[in-house]
Length: 106
Image (tube, rainbow, N blue to C red):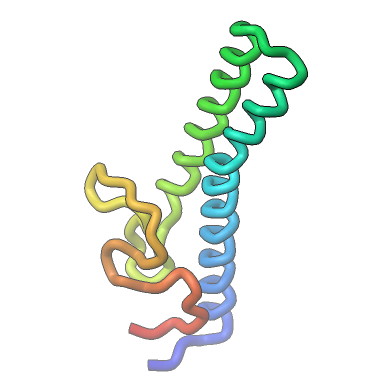
């Protein structure tokens, strides 16, 4: 089944947005340990470390929410949510569309 060029562009845009949100999520996870080490070198007080943790948790909640609310362009369900379970995998949890797919086919 062929799709129109407009559908292809929309499909690609949705997957690109999903990839950006995933990168933000994983970047947020990976930045914590280096941020703690740098902060500890600058100011090793409990208040500073607690503030860093609080800021990181808020950013992590935002990143997790953005990833959780990504919709699959093929099936229309949430890409990384199945019920209440969040699994940041490379395939849609409903229709198995791969994150690197650039064709609109079933």
